[in-house]
Length: 283
Image (cartoon, rainbow, N blue to C red):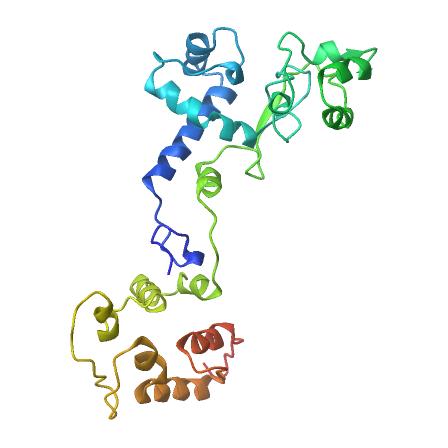
């Protein structure tokens, strides 16, 4: 069973870690700083960048906690920001305008040169580009049209279809991907009461307070199932699948709704029910 912080499909509840919340809002700060034109963004650029591109700024001992927080997340956010080049107003070296990361990540930047310096007679100046970028980068650049518009470049958030920044997309990107489970994906449904979903989560994770489970945490009790004459040990599989009462319940409703089980375990029964086609004439 996954942690309660894991997504529902991974066997958790989907609670967000404070670290993830902090990182997501830090991403929002950097996006607002880079993509916005607010008074706050202008102030931060004037105070900390001093004419440099934000990608050139190094962290200094006297920087404020807010700026340190933003710089710590900046590289991750920049990879999700893509600049649509119109007039070539974004930075040739430090902005991610090709979608694969800024050019400065793979080659030595020449900050004094920008788009206009690599264009000759309305086309890319291949010779000059070849002096400053790698061959791989050169081939990538030549696939892009030469900036010719008078309008400013635009920045989009690549994690959403609309290109607009959202915290939800950022949470999804920050949260560590985990394994998904067909069983757990069926537990959470709008038509299922939450208390039943939580019960199923504990059942699939073997965390119900049955005697066999309590044994594992050091609670010593006599184990005897009260639902069958044999008095077998109170274990999850016995109580919910293999015991006499459990089998009678499963078989009764299985016949009623035409559900056939393949296997003898609790998970086999659950999969049989959840994968069965709906039959309104029976149930």
